[in-house]
Each structure stands twice: as structure tokens, then as C-alpha cells.
Image 1 (cartoon, rainbow, N blue to C red):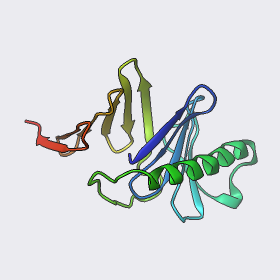
Image 2: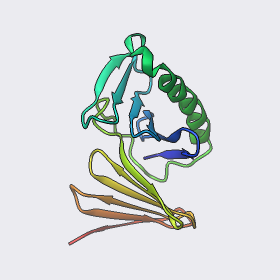
Image 3: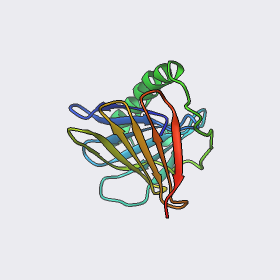
Length: 154
């Protein structure tokens, strides 16, 4: 995940992936993801494990408020992204809906996020970060000086 913002007291958590896709994990457990410069959105209902891809104009009316919030989060995160360094992260492009925030947990020490591709990211309150890639067993740590250390877990 490239950047994120916690509005869980009101809506949920918004995030931007490396490829510019923006998503929201809503407080009700539903998720929405909009591809950067794509006319589609991907929506996962709170009761479903798999989502549905929609053309924006055909998105279900009963969830239109969530689409509006996605647009607002996209604007905010795009502005935030221009102020932040990429920290050497890749610019991978994912097929829409294949990578999205599956679960998250906020603790007194930070925020833990699990993506649908198995990547677990931990953002600590002291501005350090930890990334665990399940498929490659890589663990990366970013310290306060934005120095990245990556090790292959045995």
C-alpha cells in the first residue's frame, strides 16, 4: 500500500496502492476499489468473499454514497501522495479487484493491514513500517529515516 488515511470514526479506511488505485474499507465491512484512470469499480459486499466489477455508470444505486466517498478519498490521497516519497516501492499494476484491503486492525502501537494478495503491512506510531510478503517470505522494514532493510525469512 502506498498511502492511507483512517476515517474509521465516520466512514472507514481509505488507501492508495502503488499503481494509483484507490480503495475504501468501510466500517460495515464492505470494500470498494477504483482503478486509476479506469472506468470501472470493484465492490465487495460485507457478506461476500468475492467482489463484482462494475462500470461506474452501472454501479448499484443503493451503494452510490460509497462511490461518492471513493471519489473523495481518491482526491485526498492523490494530493497526499504528491507530498510523499515512493521509498523505492514498485509501480506494479494489478488487474482491478485482485489486490484490495481485506482486513485491518488499529492498536495502540499502530495499524495492521492485510491485503487480498497475502501481503501484511504494519504501520507503527513511531513512523516505522514493516512489510511481510507471504508468497516470497520477504520481510522489509522501513525506519524513521526511510531506510529500507529487506531480508528473506527462512
